[in-house]
Image (cartoon, rainbow, N blue to C red; front, side, top):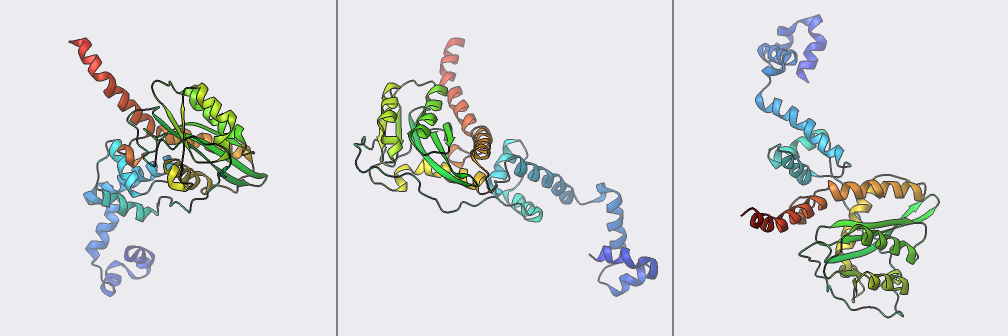
Length: 303
């Protein structure tokens, strides 16, 4: 600020007389002006900060402006840019960059207290040792100018990968069933697979349960009737609402929500760093697992 003040008044009063009235030496002023002309004269930390600020801003923007300090720091490390987490926090404050914060969860699935339901095979233990061992399913809603839009997801618990999704203007069984069909079509099912949902009528319908049986998938339904019975699906939906729905809008209709969801799912599966996966994206986590699984066989072949 003092350098700018001197710049503004030096034609009238000169540098030395102004410095005599301010807590700044003429040599300090001249050094500051020299650094403006020649960036190599800047302190090493200042030069490093300038580079890091550009990289931090790039990572934040490339990841939908949702990352906070921790994930920006982790992504920089994945790219080979090593720096302290406190440095990232300081520079993000300087740039005014903040991550999104989740809001309150909204419950959408309506329980069917009449329909016969499968047993709870999960009992709130959302753990899997391989892909396609446990899927969880749920859906949410988005308010648009043309009415409600509903978005259903099927998620692989092992990698948190979204393996199926669908958006619709109706919350009938077809919504959940279409998301399931995509998951069954895209994944190579091998071994026991459990599909877990809450007690919503969509997931207890005859058509849905028959499709699970046809695909050789065991149905599991939460028994307690609260959010914790399907906590992992609720968590991913919470991210979707925070990182997509609350960041844009107002939404005009189904087409807008559908396209935004398509973009987010592609980014989530291939780019988003997830703490439970050791700060890897779902696709990279599955690729790492596949590599470890094939390594012993490859080593045996080479020997």
